[in-house]
Amino acid sequence: QVQLVESGGGLVQAGGSLRLSCAASGRTLSMNVMGWFRQAPGNEREFVASITRIGGTTYNTDSVKGRFAISRDNTKKTVYLQMNSLKPEDTAVYYCAVQAGSGNSYNYWGQGTQVTVSS
Image (cartoon, rainbow, N blue to C red):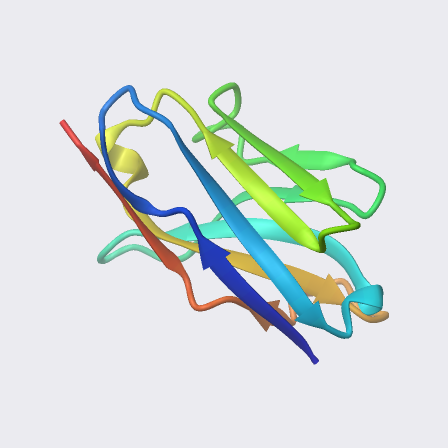
């Protein structure tokens, strides 16, 4: 089992920045890819970004490329999402997720942290 706890969400004005953190505990040696997703009211959950154990990154280019940056500190078992130039449409609950074990699906999820961007 892997437990994930997100933090860093909040209310920010458009154009501002936030940094989300997701700390993992439990069977963290089994973690491979760590990712961020988000879900706005009335919308489906959307992929934001992911990072492999050795630092390879993937982004939802349509939505966040060039504004968001994902990073990972394996010693701290933490993944980060630096969000810059925030827009009202970035408002959502942001979830951290992990692919752990031999599969390639996200099998552990955090509880989510609210990000609200005011115009």
